[in-house]
Image 1 (cartoon, rainbow, N blue to C red):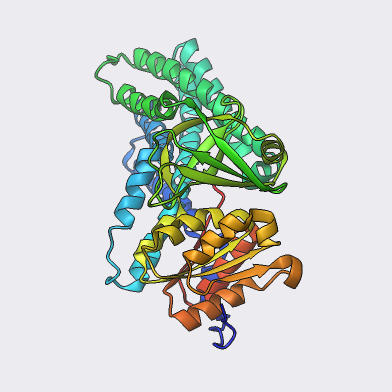
Image 2 (cartoon, helix red, strand yellow; image 1 turned 90 degrees about the vertical axis):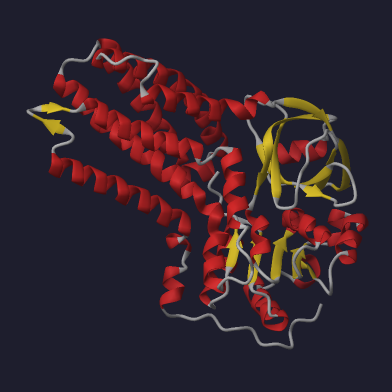
Length: 432
């Protein structure tokens, strides 16, 4: 693929370079919006006397705000709701204005609502704890369960902070799982005790119904937990290709989570279904102890749970044509879209020794389903300027958007550079 003849659009150094910076990504804008809404509710409640009346805190109103935020935050991670959000976003026709489709394509930033609502819920719990103590008419069980629950929420939020999550991801994952389960059980105890203190009937109380929804949302992926057979092939010591055929209907732009020990850790990988073949594949490259062990000793069976879930590349159908930029095993999430061919595309894939690393079969499959792709061998040519290559490809092909599948640093750089030039760009945001 020759894309050097057309000069790339030059990045603009004005306002867009600031507003499209990763620090102001839609994820954080949504989290900020949730915070502003909660602050607005708090201010209106203070003005109208909703929270404090005659020296006594209105505990049910505060508790409902805490529970409402936590319910919203938890549901935003529910796989069926995630798939629904992607389905709604991708119903928009390509005849609609580009700016509107650009915004709809950012649907995968829904995690901002998840984090914003959960932090807001924890903040309301702090106020609830203060109010319970100051009112002085709650049972010891309510006080103890509220305080313990608040401690668990603080632990989960603390380990979810970006720097801690990045450096200690296993700690983050296990804390979220086990502390989350403990918090859910304690939430039931706290809510039922709180309702008893308030003289409210359990069966008809909205908090009980909300907790029921939360519990079903958390439980539902585990109801599908199963150990399934897998066929593994190793093109090299850097990569293993896992083939599944256990009846799950994967689709282009989706992912599944797998585990060797379901109580300890789960890893999500993009599915590679073939339109004319049963089952699907996953490409796993060496990126740490877990993936290294998986490659060195490929398993005969793995655990799977939940349902096939939409991912960032599914938004390709919002655009008349796209440029895919991938590095290394990032070709895995891209390949199903090449095979499906639903949207005209150009491919840029930068990787070390592609045939040696990923095997002739996979490279030939890419070539057979792409028009003039650029496969950049980093062992021979060094690391390219992916932003410039993407902009050149857009300039030559007239593509409406760029989708980048790479590591966090490169993805953010490419998305920022391309969007600064006024072109929609999308890439994973590592918020899970």
